[in-house]
Amino acid sequence: MNHLVARVSDVSQRKALPAQKKKLYDYAHSRKWVEGKDFRYIEYDETAYKANRPKFNQMVIEPLQNEKELAIVVFDKIDRFSRESTSDERKALTDLFKKGRIELHFPSDNLYINRNSPAADLFRLDIGVALAGYYSSAIRDNVKRRFDEMVSSGKWVGKAPLGYENYVEKYDETGKPLVKGVRFDSVRKDKVHEAFVLRSLGWSYGAIAKKMKADEFTGKPRRNKYGKKVTPFINKGKWEEIINNPFYIGMMRYMGSEYPHKYGNIVEPWLWTKCQRVNRERSIRRTKYQSKPFLFKNLVCGVEGCGCTITFDGPKGAGQNVYGRCTAYTGVHKAIWVNEKSLIEEVKNVLRQITVPKELLPSIVAEIEKNHKSEQEYYRSLKKALQDEHEKLDGDIRAMFENREAYKVRMDIFEKMVQEKTDRQKNILQELEDLGEGNKGFVIGASYILELCSRAVGLFESETASIEQKRYLIQTVLSNVRLTGDKLEFVLNDPFNAIAEIKKKSLAAPNTKVWCGQRDSNPRPHPWQGCALNN
Image (cartoon, rainbow, N blue to C red; front, side, top):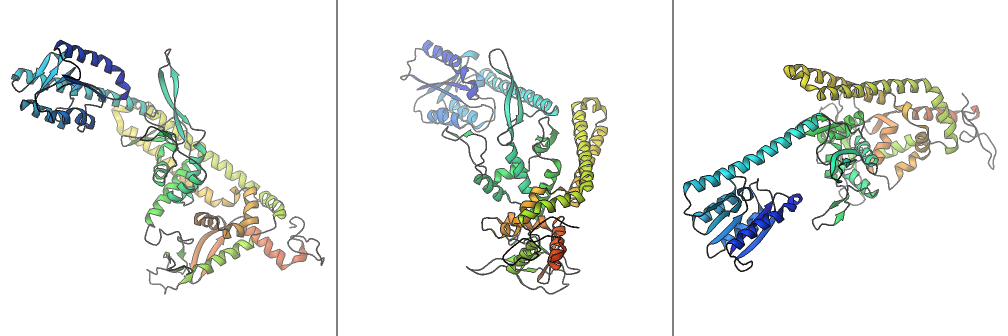
């Protein structure tokens, strides 16, 4: 049986197959071959410029190796046969024609090869393969140069990351896409930002994936191996890839380097930096016990001169307790085991100190905001100035990359200038983070305070609340939390310390009307019900 072989590099080129087929059939008819009896026609799509070609092996080489008689293999041209002289497939066919089991025919090149072919014909075959390989390499180099130019000008050359989407900016008169671009995906952008926020709060990638699945958030539609269109949920591995992709802060990775792009940021630079810090901290603390979901797993010892980590050991059976103790590596003191339940009760007591009736919270919040108005204005103006400076530096760096040809004589100066601007951006991010930590009480909104102070204990005790959510609640209300002996030490954050102080005064002196009373079955002044603050 003889074999007529037509090949294109990929599915998009299959429209070229009919022309190859016609030439191959004309050649078969010129030799008086009858289809099915004397020859079979084979067509497929697969690049010839790679070592492993499964379709070529399955459809061409394996049937030829099983032939009992001499077979003729017809390719329209040499480049349809191979563009890689060292490929295993090329060696397999060469071995077959050297043994006299096949002949290779290339009608358009007016060449055929068998075991008795002269050196000149074999040389033509080798030259044809080499030229085909050179042509592919030249195309690849041209594509790479074009991609380099696009990336240098801030254009992305691949599939847009989750939160962005590819689209066609311009069509020609026949409807063929001319210019392609990237823009925000309005359906997924906000959820991607939410994932970064959760990571910055210390959530694991698995917890983020679980929450997003519960929210029924899916990735972009794609086709599975059966060709069916699906919209899959995003697993924790994919979330890790997303949260570590600098594309979301305006930088795209290409061939080992990073370039600024022009499609806008989904994530603020300070949020990106905080996520990277969480990544480093979780990597350092990823031990046998620290990887378990303990509520106080990042707690440190408060004994003077110690500062070691508090390690927790989980229950060995149903109904047993979790205990923690200082690792005591410094040898400053002897470690003791502390029941986690006692620490949880201490936190509840603190939360009870900030719990006030919901109807009184608006007046308390109004007073706090009034007292801190000037600080809030200062915070906002300083934050805006830093953000504006960061954005200006982004524009400067982008402009320098677009015009870097002007620096080609002194690339060292170009790299130094870019590094200086990049270093300043890093300093700005640190200043923004420090500013946020130092003014935490000023940026907590009134509605959030109202919700938290009225439901703090209930939120902490809720069975549906995750470990990460409870840990975030503790971090919001308390800072500098340490375990000294068997007791927690901490600082109550603004504005919760002010609320706790007001409540303390009202309980100590109920008749001062810090908070006024309500009427009940035994009318008397009561510290919790009534009117507004009376300072």
